[in-house]
Image 1 (cartoon, chains in turn purple, blue):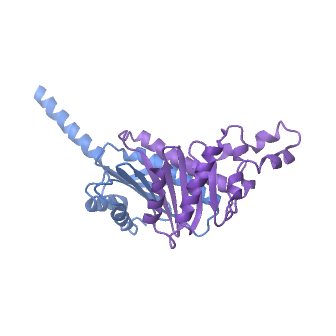
Image 2 (cartoon, helix red, strand yellow):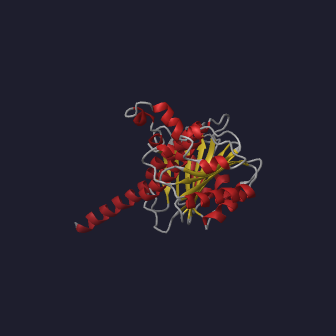
Image 3 (cartoon, helix red, strand yellow):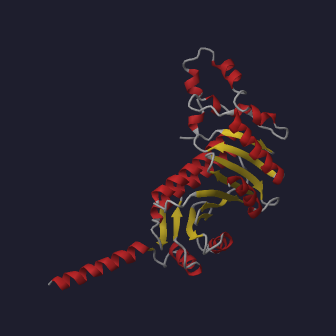
Length: 181
Length: 146
């Protein structure tokens, strides 16, 4: 559900008489910071998410902080595939850099937020001790590692994808954990 | 008379606990895998072999208050969600090997086996077992569950 709530095509099309130019005009405006970073191939086309009326406004201060986190992770792990900071409640991308393909960036962000949400639900259902808090989730693929570090202070997720041949899990986790403290 | 009832009640209680804790038989590969994991990690908090299409456990065991059936149902959704994320990324030739969830004092490991048709779910205390050991133990069950 989290995945598709970000795609307000149908809602937009119904009330507005001339939806195409409107959508074009509003599409690039949501993720300006992410585009401005040099190494990035972020496609704002795939970002109808912030256009949705349900998304709360993110302060520029928060965005700057998210940018800063992304920049410092990139500095420490230059062989990354994706580094992104995602608001864990909405799945909205606050800042990010994509070294390879960027197709479906918002979908991936939303899906990752949903994974964390799902895990929290499962923790609730299991009635674990209240001291048990989610720290991170690591997904091992055949040649890639996907890490989701919870940043509890801001309620954000730090998402990192790397190739296993470039970076090992222990190193990647150490770098991400520095930002959670 | 009362004594007789009491002993019967005791018997029921014992049976109840045995069947609640040991929900597997070692005659199936899944049950055997659970047994092997418990032999290697006697301190494991919970173990389950789960069928992904239904989210139901094929065999499970718990040493704590964690209900493996509940955990299996929720974690199946986590796996499916991640598969959806990978489809969105259009990753080719990649598949999920495992998912590790770190909590304050616990590690939850989901290891996909048998062509992504099943997963092994393992909960350990992070003070007793580290990630490398837990992964190695699960990896050794790969062949058995094919």
